[in-house]
Length: 307
Image (cartoon, rainbow, N blue to C red; front, top):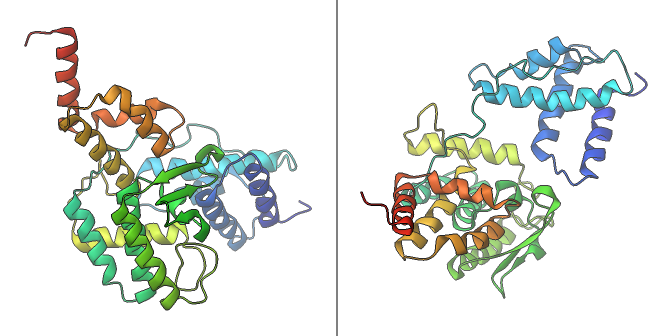
């Protein structure tokens, strides 16, 4: 190859980002794959090496190994256009498992426990930022990547609105916040500038002043989950993304309790969450027994079904 794998990776990611893909997690993991290749002195991707790297976390679920292999597959297809020696891992080589993970729905008390545990992190700078991010995710339903991508100008304290730019599918939207959430972000910004005076443009700053990395935050979050001892099952792990699920379910539960017409209000929730297809929001209706019961009651009421 005329270029190194690392140079090719930079070109591959740049090309895909031109089409609106952010690829933060994918870019980070593929960089690890390239390091894996470099450590073995390999300059050509093979199916065997791709499979070996994808299967490295032996304690992970098969769906995660399949996802890792899928990332390499996309990169390998790109490389194959320039070097026919490149092996492209076939689809189905690793089982994908369930398409949707069972969401872990956090209670308000569990969210408060996670934030309290974050305050006890040994680094005051990291503790400050971690607590603030968890609070915002729980209060707004943002995707974690959207929260980490916020810049200082994207947080409007006057109007109480976040500007989410270039989110999933390169969409942007405005996210109104509750006044209590705005006040908490204002406190964070003040403390951030005191503890991390060298922080750059990113709203949420790491101890070095740079933007918080997705993988680093996820690792910290999962450590906090273990610290507070959340009871989880193999089929239902407590993920960062489940804070978004919990927000959506809480909104739907409140609407049902208030007797609101959920069918007419749901499109507004879809817009707020940044869903392109409202069907993605409808999926939350079956997330809890309470919501499912509300749905059945409304169905029976609509069609006058006798129990």
